[in-house]
Image (tube, rainbow, N blue to C red):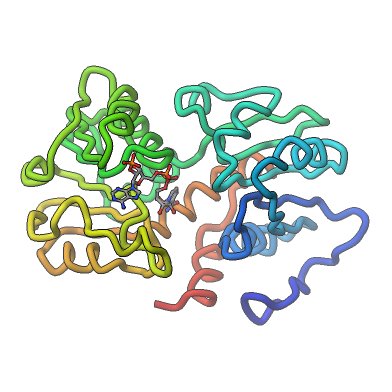
Length: 290
Ligand code: NAP
């Protein structure tokens, strides 16, 4: 058994027969995806391994050609390659085309299919961690980037009755609002007063980055009991904003739950088996104790 993060995955008899998956991005060394994947493989008892592949901007096409040539079964895709992967895969799911982004590539005999599991991961996380069903709810999404758009599309599909997008730039807001169909509009911070769900989908609050130090677009003083408040950022866990929301009485969830559930969807696509969420959470708790 592995003793912890960073140690060799000694439960896997790595060999010429081992199936390889991984995560591509730049930088990628910080990614928690291999930790989650390998915990799931161990629990399933299968001879698979997940690793990080640092892929520089501009090197995505040869990286995907390498995936085909080497028979890498699946790749999780992170910054800055989500939109490029959408352009370069052989087949795309409907959700990938709506978002014009791919966070998961599956290799079937050399044919690469791209999809996005972020939205499904968020909905599963809301259900399991907060018992929150977006159907009939008023939602406010802060951020109109790739994550914000995935959240807006998922909330719309899940039956939200209103989706307000608060974003720094009008163009980013408009792109996200377009995914909400007739129930979306660009909003202002005061709209948070009446929202059932507030989601931060910006990097504001993330430790170790200058963007992380920017002031939140929604002041935590606006948040209150009866609301569900989600921060997609999970470093730190919780962010100061999420902690303040909890102190104001809101039900809160950090970004790690979405990360776990979106990874679970990817693992099903690659292995055809349901991964153990418990094993994945245990691995995270060993790596990132609260
Ligand atoms: P992205 O495409 O680069 O979008 C960034 C968003 O943040 C944009 O809406 C941008 O607004 C806004 N923003 C950036 N800096 C800002 C600032 N200083 N002030 C105000 N707004 C600012 O990034 P992304 O892929 O959407 O990711 C957003 C966050 O979600 C990241 O922290 C990422 O790690 C996290 N995430 C978490 C998960 C998970 O599973 N938990 C999944 C995906 C993403 P403009 O449009 O005005 O530039």
